[in-house]
Image (cartoon, rainbow, N blue to C red; front, side, top):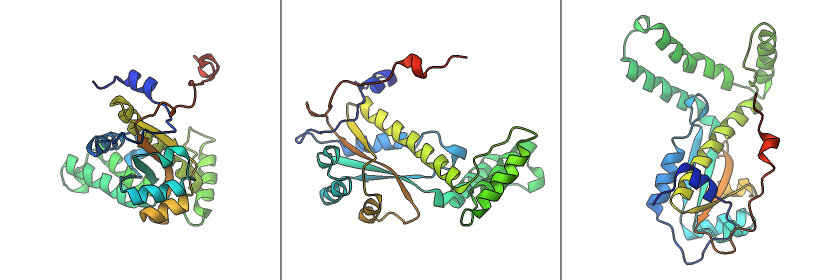
Length: 242
């Protein structure tokens, strides 16, 4: 029986060792990735890709690239979450196409005020935020938006590094959707920061401009898979009720 959201959250742990004789149903893992695909994403740009790896040869190479940590060496499958900030133009155009289909293909003058606002968000604002040249445009935007912010509330995360962080945050939300979906069906995961990302990209043929968000080892936990009780600082230290 599939776990509730709360049950899945409590069940999920970063499992470091997976059972050697327990396999995963690839279609179930794919379904969990479909859930990842439904995660919230900044401006609905969906600047992510998910590489679902089952091939034993590739798994061995990825394990080496992940510094042969136990969660990589014993994983039955791996999922590599990839950030594709370089695809912002394509994904913005996909949103425009979707909106135009929803509104009905008509002359520009026939769009309502709300429809024009939504379309211009992708036609004008997104290019303003994501366009850059050697970081120079980002700095100019930072100054301009900062001056505007003296007179009214203003979005200020406009540099190239800011937009990179935004894309990684969205990818992280998708990764969490995936891991909780896996936990809900009794599958285990371990998100790994420790990896040689250049080697990971080379192994999987990932474009140079893409970035690795995380590599996730997947399997069924062994008795030694969880290294100790879960530790969290007291909730009252991080909870601020205003």
